[in-house]
Picture 1: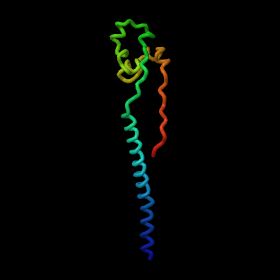
Picture 2: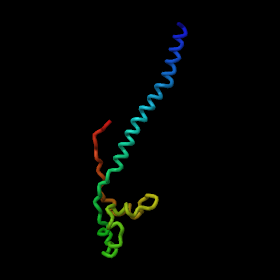
Picture 3: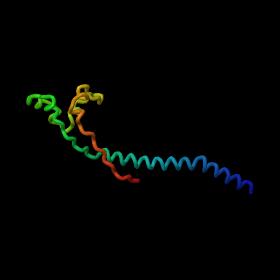
Picture 4: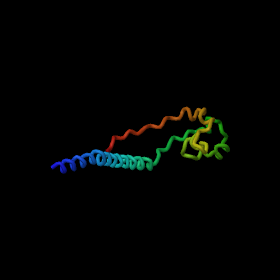
Length: 114
């Protein structure tokens, strides 16, 4: 009888010490993968086109300058077109009135899904 009690005590100890943390980790992995899949789908959605600010009007560019400007033909705002290779904005863009007056992107609130 003492052997069976000892066996169940050891089995209970293993269950508490190993099985419960492993099961908790597996459940956490499952939910994190679902969350990652949701974020992947969200990232693949087409971005909403921003209203292209006419910076050439603010800066007083000539039609020839506008024709040669990358920002005039891009759907992106001018400060996005002229980003530095490391992703930083140019100094002149930060103080530009077009950048300062640009509307903030609206957050789309979705109901929580689980």
